[in-house]
Image (tube, rainbow, N blue to C red; front, side, top):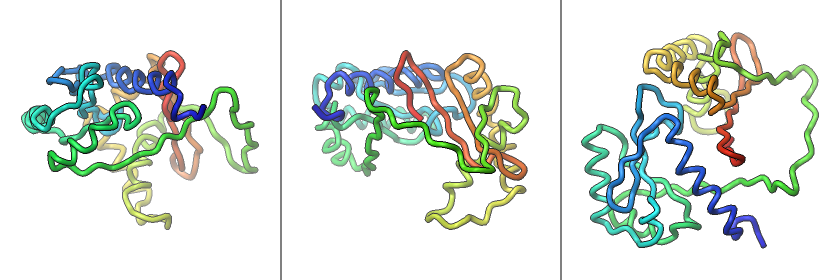
Length: 217
């Protein structure tokens, strides 16, 4: 049986996406949806979380366009993006309703590591180091700011941003509460972050959010 067709895997992934935002958000039930609202300032997860996803009831019946409109109205009231996330394999009929409500849909494929066929560890190239970043690491603000700059320009060419832009981006994360929230997540074990150091700051970053086994990187 393929991984995507594995019912238990789908259930674990769906439960993971139900659980992770609750580390730093509250869930408001609106019909068959749960709308995640940040408890405090900061954006430690997907730039939010402020998205909605099907609650248990929403996975048992097809949400209507009016259900979707109810959530969008609440999101506008909160001043947050009108965003929905769901697993197509779990709620396949939701896409049609979302599009009927006038929202575009972007697909994001799964990339799952099979626990029984884990890839072999690969050696780190000469001259490259990878290290963990803890809550008190002085490079943490720059490490957190780096992905936003790296993906700000389309394509694979080196972008125009440099150390000055990185410093300003890091300061914005300090001011909006993201840095403080991330430090809390690192201290409580709800997040793990690694970086490949480069001149002045990390030149790449990865993070994981473990939840009783499953984790997203």
